[in-house]
Length: 106
Image (cartoon, rainbow, N blue to C red):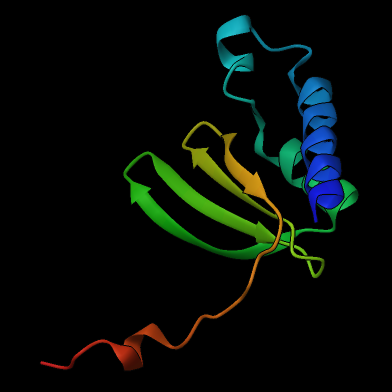
């Protein structure tokens, strides 16, 4: 597990360096880039697919990408088409139940 997490971290770092080369120093700290480029990197490097998304504000959407191997990434997409990696890791477990059925009905 530790080796997998180390590989995941180093893989994300390499992806981040490649995507941030043209970025300014302030942007590079957040690991932000063009949405399509980040998604392509997640797909090619980690075989992650979008698991779901939600509207965070008038200017942002949060997306979760997950692979069959358990790697996961949380992206924030803004209205300009730029995305930032908010978190990433390993060991994703899908335990989603139909939320609408578990909430009390009024």
